[in-house]
Image (cartoon, rainbow, N blue to C red; front, side):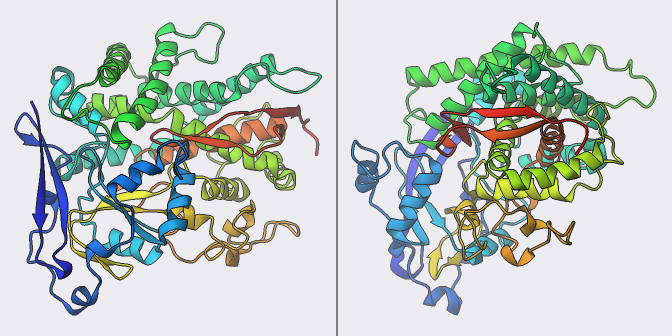
Length: 538
């Protein structure tokens, strides 16, 4: 059963501060929530720097009641997304503050000091601790052990369990050559996406008759399904697999429910509400559908032609079946909204900056003299301006506002004592939009990422970006760097080449793009582009 306790721990440090350690266990085995057992067990710090630091209890921040009032009608955080919430709290409390834990959630220290980022990362150890999706851990280890057999996955496992999985999947998912072998198939999927857009584009107004964001999700789903399962879902055709259509809907529900039960305060750990039971049903639907796809894909294994690419599932099955099944499910769950949201954000910035888009199109014409040409390893090796545009788009709006760690050691952050076992949220997105770190930070300037000049009108300006490597980290850092980084980059590059080689893209709404908070930042509201075809001549 899922056991829960809340205990106050006193530490022999300046100020005699205290903090909470939540213990949750699954069938007697402690879950991700037991952070202190993974922390350094050496003697508490008594060095001069620690003794001179201000006590943990003096870190600025609201009381629990004050924090609750912020979300009430008329409150400062009412109806804000994660970006807005971070900015409001930073304005109120400064570059370091503590958000009190509520309804069983632990306290979290928010910091906007890159020196704190480095200190946290440099002391994270070989098994970095990051609170994952608690509901997912519960679902897999308590609700459906028949399927997952004790494996939580990279998003929820910690310590040795996490390391065992990560070490198995790294060679498959993080090796560039292994990922890029999917380029021909991903290029074909992107071509089909363009063909579908053509059927939905009004030739007079050059606008789409459908929801562009939803179409991007279907492209992302089709792409990650092929990489993971070597299976085409048909989501870009007139006759998509109905199960794939259902799965896409359940994935959207998953992101919304997860924000409600994993991020916001919730009592589900002690009482299973009707809403949480619906969440478990969503998990069931995702598990059942993906399990069927996995079983179908496995039946075709062993029939590979010599030299034919093995999909991720087939490669991982050769290592460990439990890990393979869990990892592929995680890829399908994580590879839709994240990639489509990132791609849409980058496209938005290019649409709002037509001069940058035209410079990029010159590079794309060199890569693809005609739209009928194919993308290859050879012609995609040198795409510096495209990659600079992607970096710049993710600088302005990454899919998450910060990176999270549980400190395994006693640390001094911004002059305050932060005891081991404390949650630390590093606000990289705020600093990426700060003129102190990126000159003219509100402007879309891909040139800041270039190493050399590309043309008289495309000159590198690295001085416009920070030299601190810990400020810009859209895919995280260290051993817990996003496992899907290589795949996402390849998918985004491939689609942007096809889209911007085929169309001049303009942003139609008079207002900037808006974002809503699920467990990621997802574009929402009025999303409309004008897609004007471009020919094969410059």
